[in-house]
Length: 616
Image 1 (cartoon, one colour):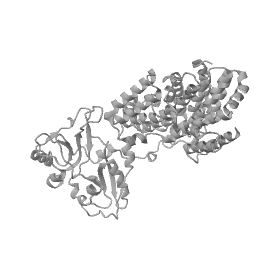
Image 2: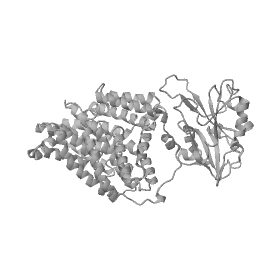
Image 3: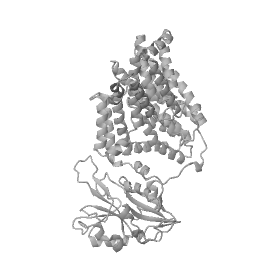
Image 4: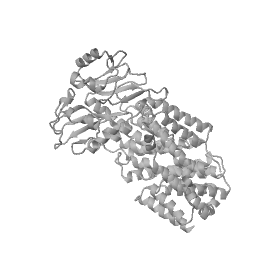
């Protein structure tokens, strides 16, 4: 028993110190339990096969698919635009929308997606973003109480109930709590945020970066862009791009080619976006995106018997409209260094296409933009080149640091690109998963895995590797490594001792006092270590305490779950709190001023409300 407690205290100390990542601390704890003979290797690794851990992996993929397809972004923008510049209305809409999204996907992902939207809305309304960012983080946590899958702590207490032989929780078992937490959170945060979080915004504090759309507009890519289809009987069909000699004969540049996919599955993407190379062979119905003077384009169309597509006519089906697609091909700016060997050479002689597999679409030189006959333009020191290519090839441009400097982070920009045409598919998959969970058609873990596979197979991700990148492995490993601690507590008798102590000291005052003690102990500990880890530690203690006292374990376990999640007084208790700290320019005391009163009010309300919803 004492060895287990010593390992636990060292683990907590390491969690609090923050010197090591939480998942590494949890793994060290797990290894120690095996080395001291407290757990067998099979027991130590049992957490990683637990349905909770597998569900978390699947839920990260489902949430990633929702973000990747732009579904959450589209919905949030449309709803938030309803608020206009009304500060109170905007505040309430941000809270409600974030909470609803946070009930179905990762609260960390929710905040990451909503943060740039909220900042831009606040700036447009001439309001301080600081007023909204901390409430945004808190709302994602409050909304996690709406559903079973909102937060890992919810899944932890569901697992504890099932393991003890009690009926598990349903998908919307948390809904009454979630509605209370959301309402209470808005009522509390509305005055507190206005009082403590209205920071004066300094224009110099806002880092201005160019989005892909900004770059496209700056270089007038779409103003100088036309689309040509290789219709039947066109002389383009079957020709290689090098044989057309577009830059030499017509002074035209090919940005990309779009081709109908050969796949017959209507759920899969029907249009492929391709970068054009010298060996690219044009097929019937291919659409070429050309930039150059319209006189030269008209001559090219006449000579090749091809078809000009107007701006309103789409190249495939109505699903694919507009020209602003960067899903597979992107753009980036390169600054030519003053000692670069490229200086004085024409762009076409620099080997960008041959060696780097990118095209140079334009040059920004001082105040001028060179967009015509770019291939023959000689490069000067300090020129900013607009390069276009596959995202992987753009990322490789950073390797050539002696000739140019890449502006921005191409990989970050690539991750921001959404497959908007897949949003309806992602919505259908998510609703299907929720229906399976609500009606208990299949086990919850199977429903989540089916949804995750659906996101991958319907191409809501660029590839499987991208789907894996959406998984927060730190959280997965943390949960998998912490779950066996409850086995160690049970084997060494710690759970019984703590439960008997709580029952002995508080039980005489009734189950309400005992539940209040468990709630406050959980709330205090979660200020220093992960809320998920706290839930894992206290769930078996709450269960044992309820059994010792002969009352229902449901209010006790809900107390653990709510107390572990409703931690607002520290920026490090939950990832969303930490995520907004820098962007909102918050200090630690800001969280104390706003979060501590909120946490105390929630403790009082929840201790009184939980027994009403789940009687002892």
